Length: 179
Image (cartoon, rainbow, N blue to C red; front, side, top):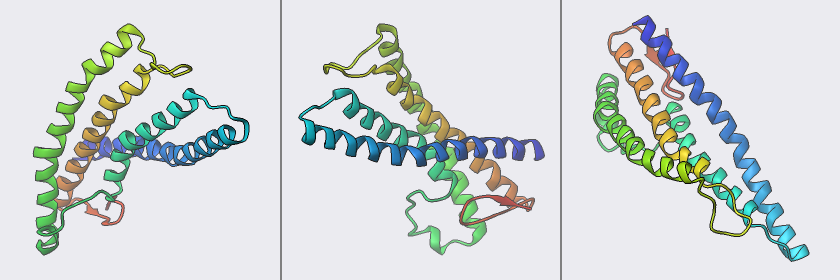
């Protein structure tokens, strides 16, 4: 179980670093948005590139922030049944839901979105707007975001199995295994 827990820690560390970047992107998106609006109203100048940059940062936040949010156990959960279960029952429900729903759905969406990215990359797709940005880099965010979420799902399953075996306990707030 130790090698699997080490893998889980590596996945957690990766998503923690990505989450840290996402935290800065929130501020950056606000600054770009405010600056774009001020320049537009003060000088009558607008840039499609800056507007698209806001959208790109938001897409990055949503797609990469999902795995970070899942890691920190701050995701939306329907707790109607969850609250009535024992701690062991909650571990089982988390594990089954992640194994049979989250991971397969994420991998399917990553697989289906890959050609969407590859087509854009192959033709060097650009925005249709004057002064717009390249489109293929942001289209890469879609499959990679789903892969990161699936990887975080694998990490969560590993932690749940270890907790069910009594090898670790899970800190309810941040989903960190403690020994």
